[in-house]
Image: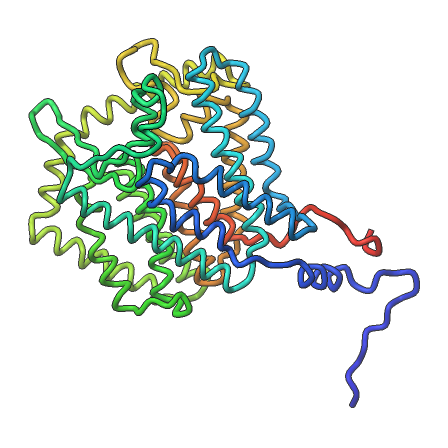
Length: 441
């Protein structure tokens, strides 16, 4: 019996899907090296004071790569983020000083670079590219944990960088600029009771960024437990995770703790009910119970609660006050916001409005519509992503953690690019807008 062969009807295209598959085979697929380099190499850029500039710089190289390997195909879901950038650009008319213009330009460059990186990632669909990107995430996680231990051992260590010495004193002395270009291992906080907390920060500017990044990157470390192609022995991954618990505990990032727990719980439930794999759920339950028993018997949980009580009341009151005032002030300029964070009229000496969370930063700086478009991009990526592979599954978990962090932590610049990698790996665009074959048209 001879195989049957489909016969094309006269005047019809044989198969749109067949054309699409041929087209995708003809498109060069990159190896993900540029994105992997900026993620894994970020700590080096941070150490020499170029952390804020490395992402826009690598985005330029990504544009060169995209132009070189045409035709350019733009994932359809990136349209919402592009519209978000239009509103970011419109908000510049609210800028009323040179310093605020520089801050607006820096933040805008991060957003533009993030979109470019997503378009670049849409072409990095080979198995080699995916593994390289996951390994880069794991490298950044490992360096972040090492930075946490460095903060515990030498909390006062800081150093000047070439950029901090080259900038004029009027710019380099600005507190925000100094936090970006002068590395420090820890963020030291002293409270009214005289309690000093040495909270890990390296290789980021703030402790909140440190905890947020650990939570976002941990799912990719967990992926190495299931996907042996990543190349890490299972015992090494378990040892890494156990080692990371110490600085993660001392950082006292309540939001990072909570979002990571929710993300891992979601992973277990999704594996059990969606992917029909009950083993991850059982592993999560076993690890959670074991950790709780150890924490109770060693007094770790009591110590953590005591330290959290020292700062929780003041921190919660400050955050609630900022959030309420941010909403009130944002309603005064709902379409384009104020361009950048501004001092709080109710408390000029306190934290500026448009801080203490990526959600509030976008709402205040660029308006409610910009916030809706920003959320649409990531929520759509999370909902649309099938997450069938091991890496896709854990990328989806990382994306959920990032979404939960939006009201709690700022995501600029590093966490935004981690989330771009997560949304790309979770859904790895199959639909795109781009050149269409004349025959298909």
